[in-house]
Structures are given as structure tokens and as C-alpha cells.
Length: 529
Image (cartoon, rainbow, N blue to C red):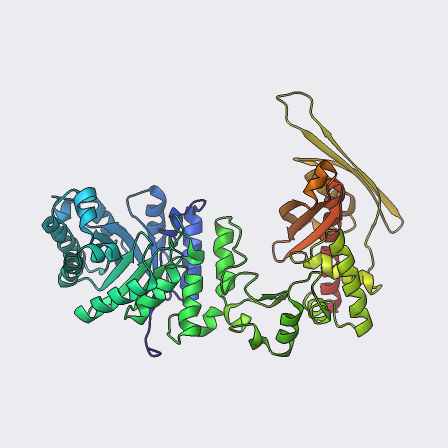
């Protein structure tokens, strides 16, 4: 098994694009193809030629690219019922894409042959044979996706097998078993794949969906049973519950099972690739995603943190850096001294004495009692450490702020205006700004006030803004917790503010965000000297 090589077939640009909320621009498709090629996947499925202008534009652009590792595949179906293959527009579109690889799907479940194609079992076999042979005659590597194969096999194993053998006889290079409905269990996939492997010498692939939460597990079982190609999508994008997640299956094969699929040094870029794809389609990353999620190597319980400090293997199944991730220590009222010390080192706060650690822990618990949460607010925690250790140097002082929200008519939008007065050394800056909402206006006024002194904050953007009501029983007088995520395009950091007044809570989080950026800038300048 360890000498086995499994080919990775990425269908993010086609099957992944069918996910709710996922859409790739023409430029985005090419950008992702370049990233996937550099990462080392074997096949990149670009889309369905002829189905839409965007996919055709991709294939035209791909012809001008030089891919170092991956083969580009066009996706389509077998010829239509009672249509000559050379006259079928879908098949002709596959040739026009000018890709070295063509992947076609065909029916392997009689239910679909009867109710969807509305033709005979014999005609379906002819459709498979004609299309595969025609594409092979035109010099293509042909991958045959047996759609709904596992359901078809459970319904009529002889016919499902006949479909595969027909594709193989016509010249298909790889036969892919598809759990299109995503409802199969791992034991079923293993047993059926093993049966097929014993009945044919063809290269087998696996294409799974995650409707029963088994997309990755089913792919692993298919590989154990003999499959040498895995089809999936980055971050598990896909219709309904998604496809087999390549960011999970690749390290599982490579690191856990010793099966080669991606160069080991490339896996160290896996988290970056995962984040790139999410960013490309403007989706928030899954913090709990195995291997690549922000929380994948996060530790909160004091005993766990203490154990990891002594030996990371106690609570980490692999080294985080093997997949480009890193360890995170989470802080709460249950944290101990080990957590505080490690977290201070993680965020750049340096080492602390036993007394200093105790002081930080005491202040942390007092703030958490008020409603603060530092799990997603590393920047606020670092500022907290600096304040407790009397090392914090404020860059400016607030003289005051005012926020006004005005609505002039039932059909008119609200107008938000904020005024901020701050003192930078001996200079007072007094500014006003409008915004889409009160927080946006406050943010704008603060930036306007201090940017002449600190121009580096101009490229800082609020990436996310979250509000949590901590005491809902108090209704409108409840304590409000505001979490802000900020980014300068290179780094992202989180801050937190708590108050009974949502505007003040937002200000506290904004203040930490700006001060952290200035602190980072000052630290970087100091390192360069």
C-alpha cells in the first residue's frame, strides 16, 4: 500500500462551483488553476464546455497557459439518445476545448436510464461505447465517470458492471465509481470497489459526495480497496452537502496512510491554498476544518496546554507545520499558567515571570467575568499583556467621540455621523465622518483623525464585525460584546470590546485594532534596525 500512487483529480472549478454561494470569475478560474498546478494536483477539471461562456473562456485561456504538472480536463456527458456521436454538440464541445483529458459521465443505474434518459439499457451501453471510442480516436485521455454507480450496483450489479466493462472495452483510461447521491456508507464503498477491482484490471477512481457525512471516509475506503484516483474539491465545495474534501483526503492519504499523492513539501502549503480558495470566492473559512482550519491545532484546557508544552504529540496527531498550519492556545477563565505563558509567547508578548503570569491570569479572569472573550481576539490579548506588565504605550489619547444616527423620513435611509477628538502627543485632531452605520462612521472618523500621524493605518480594513448579547434577560440594557476582525492585506487580527453600550463596545474593539497595527509597525521597524 505504501508504494501505491494515487492521482488527485480536482473538480473545484466544475463540481465545486455548483455549491451554494460559490461562483468563480473567468480570471479567478485561471488563478485557481495556476495555484492547483503549482501545488501538484494531477488533474484540473475546468468545466463543461458549451454550457456557459465562462467555461469556454477558461478553456481558451488555458490553451495559452503552460501547466508544469497538472493536466486540464474538460467535462461532459455521453452522446444523446439516438444521436450520432459525431453530430452531438456536447461531444463536439469537448473536442473544441482542446484539453488533453476529457471526462465524461454515463448512466450506470437503470433507474436513471429509464426515468431520466428514457431509453433502453442497450442504447445506454451504446451511448457509452460510442462516446468513449470517438474521444479516444481523437487522441484524448478518457476518464469515464460512472454516475450513481454505487446505487446502480446495489440495484442491479450485473448491469452496473456491464456499463464499466463497455467503457473499458471502448478504451477508457480510468473508470470512476461515483457515489453521486452521497448516501453510501464506507463499508459498502469498500466492498463494492473491491468487487470491481477483482473483476477488472482497469484503473479505478472514486468520486464521492458528503450527503451522509462520509465523503472523505468513502474515498479512503475506495483507495484501500484499490482505487488509484480520487476526485474531490478544495474545502469540500459542492452541491448540497459538498464533495470529498481534498484538503482532508490529501494529508490523510499522505501522512496517515503513507500513500503518495502530493509531494510532501507541497503539503506544507495546504492551509495557504485552502485560504486562497475561500478568499477567491469570498467565503469565510471553516475554522474547524481538519488539518487546515484555524482551530485544527487549538488547545484550551489548562491540562491539555500543559501537556502540549511538554510534548505536542500528547494532543496533536500530526505536526501543524506539515500542512502549513500552526498551534494556537485559547484563553478563558479555565486557563492555567501554562496557557498564559504559551499564549503570551505565541502573540509575541515574550516570556513572563511566575508573578507576571499570575497577574495576567488574574486580569484575564476579571475581564472574562465582565464578558470579554479572547479566543478570537489575539490582538486584544497582546495589548492586555502589555498593560498588565506596564509596557503599554498608547499612541494617542481619546478626548471624546460622538455618534449621531438620523432618519429624516420613512422611505429615507439612515444617516450615521461620527465625531472623534483625539490627542497625539501635543496635537489635538478633531474630525467628523459619515458611514453606512454608526460603527463604520466611527471607524472613518478615527482614521481621519490619526492617519496624518500614522499613515500606515490607511490600508487597514474591517474584515468582520460580530455582536453578541451576553445578558439577553436584561433586554436593551444587556451587556454587548463586539468582536472585530481587521486586516491590512497581509495579516489578520482580532479584537474585542465589551460594554452595555454597543457603540462604546465597538470603540474599544476599534481602538485595540488600530493600536495593534501601530504596535506591529513599530516592532517591524525596530527589527530592521
